[in-house]
Image 1 (cartoon, rainbow, N blue to C red):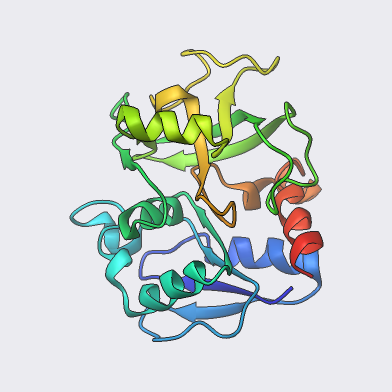
Image 2: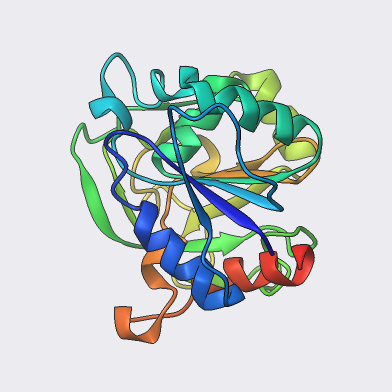
Amino acid sequence: MKAAVVVFPGSNCDRDVAVALEAASGTAPNMVWHGDSEVPDSDLIVLPGGFSYGDYLRSGAMAAHSPIMRDVVKKADRGVAVLGICNGFQVLTETGLLPGVLMRNASLKFICRDVRLRVERDDTIFAANYHAGDVITIPVAHHDGNYFADPETLDELEGSGRVAFRYCDQAGAVSTEANPNGSQSNIAGVYDKSGRVLGLMPHPERLADAALGGTDGAGMFTSLLGALN
């Protein structure tokens, strides 16, 4: 699997996700600077977490207009897999590759803690090594993770199975109490229409090694390896 990680000014999880990708695949990804005009030939492009451009204007808004993003959008349209984590999810919505927006957390506070997610589908390249209904633990670290979309968009996402993960409790029940940021329908991640672009707020790379305290996030990277190798 040939992977590339885009690095923006303010990215702070780019190396974390690079380590997780190399652990899964045995091959270090290409680290691509935001000012470059082209992503090297890749099976997977990752937009990492962080605070691109200091979150000025709006989270992900400036990064979405970086030179490299023109090529990311072009490659995504051609079927290259794209994973946007946290700030990367925000960038994907700003480019229009994914619907909806990520607003300020309902608490108006930065949230950094482990949360539980329910896997909604296991028939995608990102989730093949999970089972639908699995409850996994993944950390979040964001100030603007409150997913919002208009009613028509939400209906389309639900009807076409494009909700990837939902915030839930230990038993897998979706509730207000289990929702860390106020996201509509407890949505933690969504797919595009092809299922080859995923944006999610939690950080799978932060629990992808037992030394970090858990391996629930590793399944995403091994799923990608199996699908794209």
